[in-house]
Amino acid sequence: MDKLSSLLTSLEPGSDRLAALEAVKPALSTLSRQELVDGLRDVSLLPVFDCLNGGEPSLIQAACSVLQHLLGFTDPALVLERYGGLMVHGLVHQDENVVLLILKQMSRCILDDELALLVIQRDMVRPVLDKLEGELVVATEVINWAVLLAETPGGVSALSTPEVVTQLQGIASKSTILQMRVLDLMVRVATLGQEHLQSVQTSGFLEQLIKILHKEDFLLKLNCVELLTTLALAPHGQKYMESAGVLTIMTTLLEDCPNHPFADILLPGLVKFWGNLAHTRPQYIMTKFPVFLNALVNMVQSDDFTAQSIAFETIGYIGVS
Image (cartoon, rainbow, N blue to C red; front, side, top):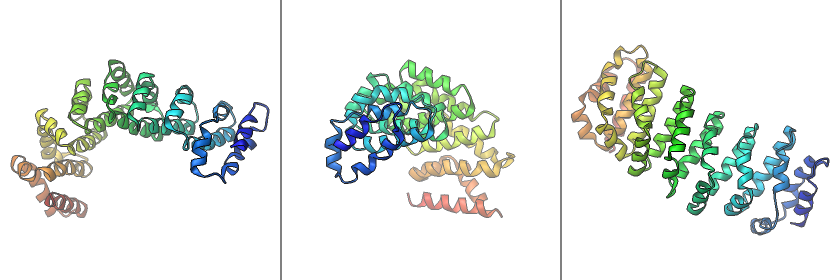
């Protein structure tokens, strides 16, 4: 660890910081994992974080690599305590690799319920959610992080505050792509439990999702069906959709699908939705919604090999329930 301390000390502006960073991993190669864990408790990584402020791509990449390696051996509680402010600041970095590095560490922190509460108390939730507007790879990590947060005791409340709901509504209003990202997040949170679903319902996002079913935008409608299929995997999600009239709307969509100009694309999504429902309650769904059974029969009897395959796959999925 003395070698590491010496290298970190040499990370001063004007010095060959890139060479120092590239020497870090080789210098630690002889140490065991436990030696690294114990040693890093007494070592500050602030000089490495400072390298992220440089404009040189090679220096930023090297600093990210070193931080990813060293922070992986650092207790999440220490990461949050020592570098929490720097991580929030780094979320607005122009290099997405820096943002991804920070999101990974933020995810490690919220795996612990007490640390998750600290993240909430320090108002670190909204800066992370802002990155839903970033590139897809970043937005995906943000969604995964928020779902993890929602699983903690105070997580769903933190995602349901008026400030956060307003923030998410603002993001969703900027484009259809961002709208679907926000709705994807909300649906995944809603599937976690009845309390989570009620919270998402109160925020109005499920109502937004249902309204999309009535729009003419085909791609939006297709994405909406996919999200509702995810919600249908949860028993409480099925009950909500039945009480909210979603199943009636989906019945109409399935009935009208043969007349839709993009029926070949829309039908598989609708069949998957109904198949998930029928998997858990086969007799009820088949009896109350015969349009689904009729659709399967028509697909089996069609000349379309893809439609036949989807139908047989769905029948098999229902049959194992």
